Image (tube, rainbow, N blue to C red; front, side, top):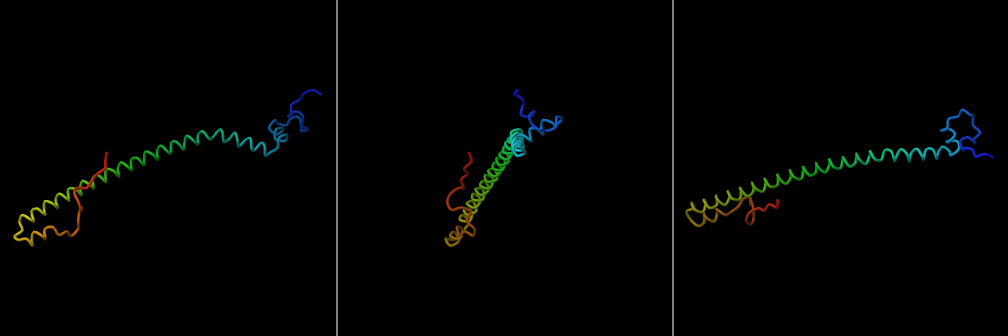
Length: 125
């Protein structure tokens, strides 16, 4: 017996396309499996590139938000320090213009304390 191809050995009509002969010999589930493996390997590269691109964009957005938050925090801390300085100045004016010790004591009563000790600290680098 001469060696013949598997696809030529089947009992299908002679004009049958090779794809159908292949499907008959190996079975439809195997063909589907082969197709899915091919499709995944052909398309996974594009998906990975898309995911990496999206991660880079998200990283840039998060970094921009973090920078904006740091700027806003520094501005708020600067304003709080200025308010604290203004409050100290007003207390000193109050003490200097007070006519007696009771008035001087009232200069240090606080309705809404700004800070407890010293200046507000920024941790910007």
